[in-house]
Amino acid sequence: MANIQELNKKFVERFGESERTIHVFHAPGRVNLIGEHTDYNGGYVFPAALTFGTTLLIRKRDDKGLGLATTNFPKTNVLSVEKIVYDEADDWMNYPKGIVNEMHQQGITFSSGYDLLYHGEIPNGSGLSSSASIEVVTAFALLTLENQPVDTVKIALMSQKSENEFNGVKCGIMDQFAVANGKKDHAILLMCDTLEYDLVPFNSGSYKLVIGNTNKRRGLVDSAYNERRAQCEQAVQDLKAAHPELTLLGQLSLEQFNASKHLIKDEVVSKRAQHVVEEIDRVLKSMDALKANDLQAFGQLMNGSHDSLRDLYEVTGDELDAMVDAARKVPGVLGARMTGAGFGGCTVSLVHEDSVEQFKEQVGKEYNEKTGLNADFYVCSIGNGVEQLA
Ligand code: GLA
Image (cartoon, rainbow, N blue to C red; front, side, top):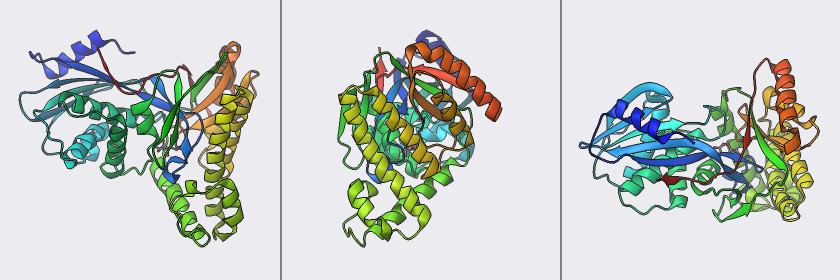
């Protein structure tokens, strides 16, 4: 957790002294344990909030300005809160701008302008949802300070919409939902079609979740991501011949899918759909495994998820595959997979606590030999969703 006193000093350096109170909020990053590329297909996901994310310091202004700064870069921008437009040169600032814009679209007006200083602890482009974390913390803080109702499900939807429309990334709901609704030591079983969810205690006993950052930037991710989405929509169109009411792949059981998959004309589209339907089934099986306290089975399902993302959905890439292969060779590892959109970013492994040091050393070494890149590892604890800090 960030040092708030230090951040207060930095806030004043950027935005000056004032009588007004500086409020502090935090939203985490997220890791997805299983259920990948299922959210925009109306299926299940099983993410958890991390203990690190984005800390936001925010203070009202005397005018209608919108001051934006981050401790990660030197630039400070003051825009007008009433005139928000996307500008590529504004880089990460387009996320808070997107939220302000979305709030305006939904008829939420502001009593004043604001200064905001962000302190991001999520490595950029690591696939641990730094953008969702920024969006959600911004919406939560502004609604709180404007004395508006603060509903974390609505905040997730608003954040997703702003990312889809203002930032042009057609992401599903998983990241924003996990960041907004996470709970310490719990993972979230979310049905993305209805947004019904269950907070499931994630009790991994003597096993740790270890995140491995490939430090391979997720290049081309947006276009490949949008292409996968389009392929899933194509599969739905073909399957309508047998299921006229079908709107999302997640509405079919594995049995129903297998009985009608011959209707999918394109072979690649068929592989994509197969992944989605089987992955949703794996999420449900992983719930049974957790209930039975069978971490071995949970780990096997994680492995199955990665292999399907590699062979059927084709979103892993050399770096993620190299890291996962190396991870599975370490004794005490029950399962290893990529997490998030893919094409770089992070892996997550279930590792016996006595093997964590060996894991870091062995996987780091083998990964470096294969890819020339240096990995980072975080032993992860599950934290809370967005909140105001005292
Ligand atoms: C990204 C998106 C999510 C989800 C995952 C893949 O993280 O933002 O909505 O689709 O990829 O599971």
